[in-house]
Image (cartoon, rainbow, N blue to C red; front, side, top):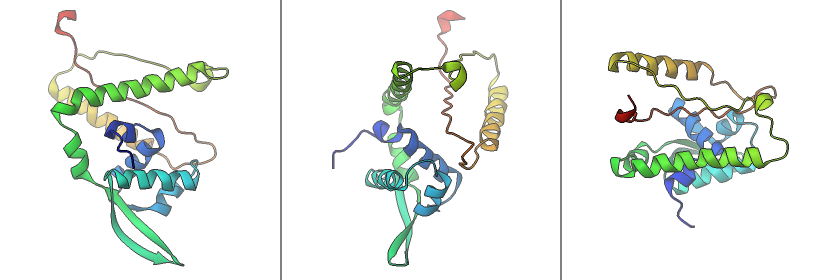
Length: 174
């Protein structure tokens, strides 16, 4: 196995969806993950789950034998996330995040017939003037809004990648 940087592992859209599903639940079985992310082929899901297990981002909480196969219950390995989420890694994590987003835009706009209006592709940057308390309220409302729109996969729904960044403001531009 070639060791990948945690950013390479996490910044894949399907693997990120697996992590997000497990972040909202204490644990899920592999089958439940496949049902929740049903637009991704089952073999791809199992490959990504195994990759997340290999990189210790997921742990196996329990195993149960069902009709000759083993059903694994999975959870996030919070200590592994904490180990990699340090001040020393922050700049690298931010760069990896931004480069992955750039790669998606590049692929999209170099692809056949990009149509940002139809596909609802946009970039937005807003600087808000908020006290720490107001910003905390904003983040709480934003979290609630994101949770409210985290629906199960259906034929009518397609994944939409929404990225939100709280970035430092250059003091010389105030």
